[in-house]
Image 1 (cartoon, rainbow, N blue to C red):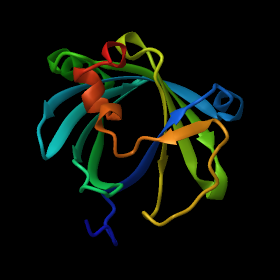
Image 2 (image 1 turned 90 degrees about the horizontal axis):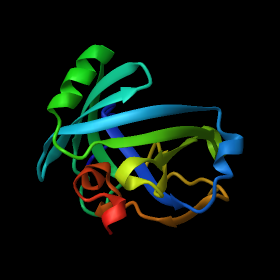
Image 3 (image 1 turned 90 degrees about the vertical axis):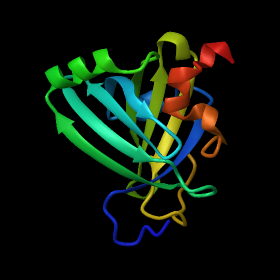
Length: 163
């Protein structure tokens, strides 16, 4: 995927988290509920409630071996997000997202899952390019960027508690 000069490209790496030390460095946390309106081999359409804000997002699948994918996200009224969540496919995600500043002005978003995904804690780091480097935070363990079991769209269908 050519991601030069494209503002709708998300470049993200995903990791398992080994302890809760990230909470001490977090600048805030947000409660998130999300569901999927559509999932197919090319893209997903999700709706989210972030505390009192709503969002609808269309994400493409990443090209094999790449961290990059298209992402189009729009804020919508929370009341509309609630209505769309009621229409979503079975298997909603509930999580607390911790915002943790890290190396090189980057932010690590640590998701602590609840419900059927309780016990799973994942960290995501968005990058400016696939070649960008950073110092790995001490709370991170193995990388799972390319393991589809850790995609939220997969966790909605096959929750962590069923593995």
